[in-house]
Image (cartoon, rainbow, N blue to C red):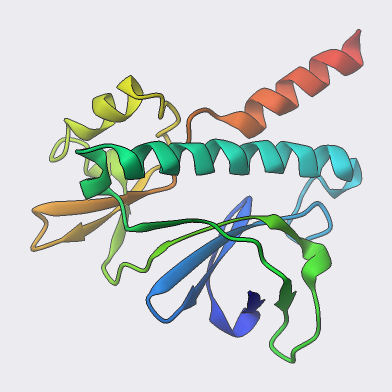
Length: 175
């Protein structure tokens, strides 16, 4: 699969979001991306980002197989290997991405809000996620559907893997 910047719909600290038809692709940026503030760490930074990707991917795999939680996330299409990312002129800019760190889900056309603002209305979901190993929910957001009676959640992980990896790395450099 080839992603084009013409299909970019959102940018995050660790990833870019592309939409093609009814499918969304979340691909993690590399240390060579212009938005990476820690680009001087090179491959170490990429390893931190790969760990964050694996934590998110694992959380999506857990939620998508759970009898109840799967109702609270967009349809999950799994891990996707990206062949190339192109700028709007068709020039290969793949060096700015971790092509092996991408997963896909159904596109949700609804307003998105941070889950913190919606927690009271959907207070049973987060404890359920935590109980099955999806413990990093602080960054979670939700799309409200059906006049606010249903929600589809994104941006969750099994752990704050980037932070944990970075702390371990810093500690190892202090020894």
